[in-house]
Image (cartoon, rainbow, N blue to C red; front, side, top):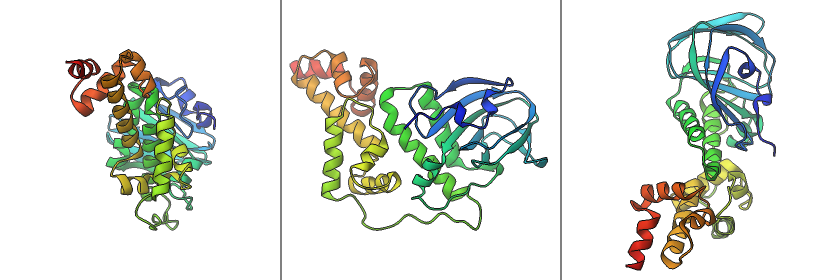
Length: 294
């Protein structure tokens, strides 16, 4: 699947009054495009896009007007306010003042997958507040700012969580998102073994969440719920734990250079391994190796 890019958006980000600070361009994100930028006041119209749009206001308050053929609604939006626009619909918008924003564009496939392929139509919202959506978008911005290729599974997790919350709380009334199918409370032994085998075989690679779900025969949203029900961990947390365990074995039992240990175990570089070991074990690769040889 190709990376989602600015060309899959409605064109706001390509305008001269928008000055991006960072984007997900080139990071390989397949169903999600994220951009953080400053915007100057403007009024413009845009065609429908294949992706759904969520804008998080980072500062303000600022007055925004929106509509289709005309500007039919207006609101003074505070910091943390959201602008939601569904895929396929034209947009006319007026921004009344300078503003810093995070834009997230989600493919329709991602939205449907996160809602178990149920019927989902996002509402056109202006100024809505949703602490969970705000947190997820700020986290995506932080991941862009501190990008490590090995965070791929984490980005998949964040994207599906964002899509699921949009489907639950920001869809059109009268077309509710069906509740999660209950079924069994966790993965079977065979499903869990298949995930473990994949993780061990591909420990040094970025591992998309959809590929982990595929070996269990579940949708991504079902997989995430049932994996955590069985293990108590999200797939991303499980993957990091396995990488930490593997790095510890190599550091204690071999003389392989630390930089190579990091690469073999799926960390981007030695400094990345050091940060993760500090966070998880309150130690460093060098200290772990010295303590073992002492």
